[in-house]
Length: 414
Image 1 (cartoon, one colour):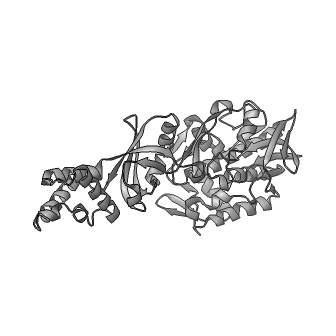
Image 2 (image 1 turned 180 degrees about the vertical axis):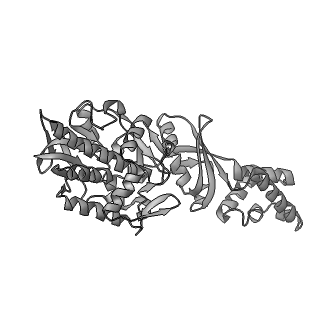
Image 3 (image 1 turned 90 degrees about the horizontal axis):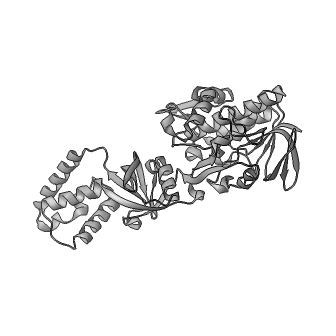
């Protein structure tokens, strides 16, 4: 009989187990993968951006009351202190915290070493098939074994990156226990789009502002390095607004994105630069004035310049354009490129999911189920997700600690 059984050996599950074990609980962690913390090893391009100096509500999405309550119990400063204690010296890069080694494997090793020191039992390749609630304990069934625990914490994730373990396999089990879900959609992901020659511009990375319009109403925007791909758009600014796009698509609403390239220039600065280039091209003869790729050389990546040239020439059927007409067409192609979003990339390519267990069914102070006493939740399975920058890991640490603390408190109260 275990005091606490944690289902899922991801970031939230591991810190939950450590928290409970430090308070004297006998803890078991069940992990469906062949080893723990697989998803953590891929975070931050393998460097593991594990929290952020700037920790405000606008960096998160989902239930704001739940977010405020949990982050108030385990703050960013607590995260830094915890990891420093177990051997991770933090490196602050413009507010983004990484291990000094800049290796996610360092963080995974530190967590697993601490779990081993505390005598936590970690059982891998143990997918949970069923959870039965008895009067004073739970029975948890895997294909090979049955386990008994006084308190259970679900930290299994949702559906993002299923190859790393979050495949939604716990949904049915939780629904059988009476829990409801906010619709789950991919987030921190790219999108399939039309409205540009994406095969031509695939591989281009360029600074841009990405503005999202749902049914022609503006809903979100972000600026950063846009990645143009064969299927559409990706990159950090797309990830930061992805939740809004995914939910609008889920609701079958029309979603358009305006791409504004060269965001560092004001409109007047860009118009002035285009005017200067067009006038200079005129000095070499009328033909060169229509060579748009040359006009944009040194201003935009070559592939993007070529695609803009093709678009303008096709739209105007090769007609000779006046200086003013050409300037306006170039300006609109650079600053007001509207594309239609068709669908999100699959969960396989999403870093996280939006949605999760309905907050109405849990106690926001303890993360314990209101429907099944002794059952708690931590991490991505809850209806909170963050933008890029260490926010999703901070949520994992905070919610994991709160769930671990409460699991032990329940046993002490009994």
